[in-house]
Length: 194
Image (cartoon, rainbow, N blue to C red):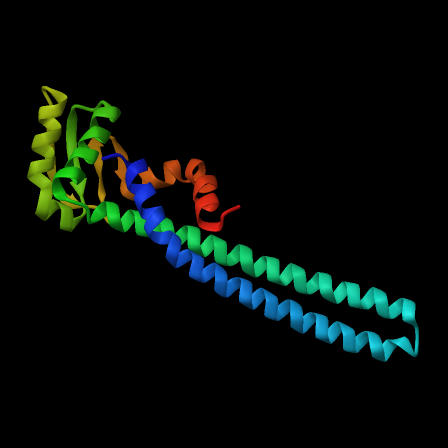
């Protein structure tokens, strides 16, 4: 099961939740625009007596300001939704079936190409899949000499390989961040129908 498949499943599950947030944001935007329009109309009537030309310019300024604020709010909510979707993806990856999880992590080790070093996991994964994962990785590598470290990492999941003087970070956070830029346009399209 690939990260793209899991991310697709997560996105489809999250769409309904995000649609509700967008609907609320659009309602708030409408409210702000209506309030700004009402304020602008009242302001224009007051200024009509003094100078119709100046009043029109002020109304337009107020409407643009309200539109900019509404746009900023929409963008902020969209960013929160994208971040929440990615956070949900990380959680789902970390909580997936042990066999699938070990398979994904083993595929990642094969891609890295290191055949020896210490494998560091978070404390939950170390206890639940530590030795199974290291055994699977060594088997997949052929003559792998990976060992399970006593040290733990602070991550939702994934691993770090400590080899001599370098650490290779393959935490779920790092793997998802690596595909985030490429996946964000598709995520935006699915979440916001743009």
